[in-house]
Image 1 (spheres, protein in one colour):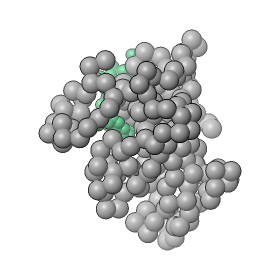
Image 2 (cartoon, protein in one colour):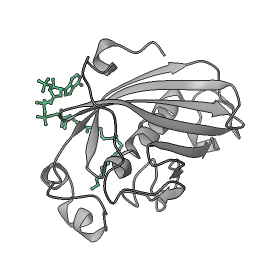
Image 3 (cartoon, rainbow, N blue to C red):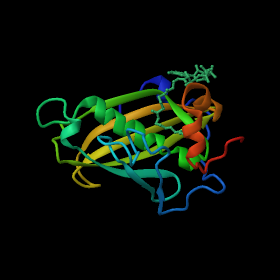
Image 4 (cartoon, rainbow, N blue to C red):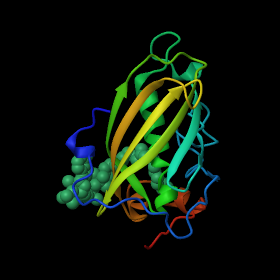
Length: 184
Ligand SMILES: CCCCCCCCCCCC(=O)SCCNC(=O)CCNC(=O)[C@H](O)C(C)(C)COP(=O)(O)OP(=O)(O)OC[C@H]1O[C@@H](n2cnc3c(N)ncnc32)[C@H](O)[C@@H]1OP(=O)(O)O
């Protein structure tokens, strides 16, 4: 991954620790919002990512490229693939048990991804420093051992739940049940 200095943990950054009360190894990680383009079950043309954590420290998910996700004929749109990387990395909020948002997302496209391909996604944290979390992800075509088609590196920033109430739909937030801590 050709990550930049912005997405590289600084010297002395901590490692992700399994949060008390966090998901146990093997647990499914639910959708954080039903209308989310990445993971929402109500979204008609979204990515419908379904994720699990194999070990409490990383996230794995699958995304099958559909007709609604094309850029060039028969091929996935690069922005949609970036969204898939953003989402699988964002699923790490369940591991942190705190809300984070994307500050920066860097993506390498290594191979075209045809419609019908299932991408096997994996995300992991490379360091934590204050409110900043450094994460990476990869998407392999066809199987968990398939060729890497997409790679990403990201800087996520921890926010309070008021971020979503101030900028978004406070009622929708209240109507959904979130398991991570609201007032850490
Ligand atoms: C209800 C469901 C919940 C659900 C929760 C889960 C959602 C997951 C969804 C998937 C993920 C997404 O798509 S999230 C959606 C896309 N992202 C967004 O909408 C975020 C928009 N940006 C913002 O709201 C803001 O810029 C923030 C929150 C990121 C930062 O603002 P802030 O809180 O005022 O903090 P600020 O002081 O600016 O930044 C803190 C530190 O981070 C650094 N920093 C911030 N942004 C960057 C950046 N792009 N590149 C480099 N560095 C940066 C600053 O230099 C600073 O470093 P230093 O000076 O301390 O060293």
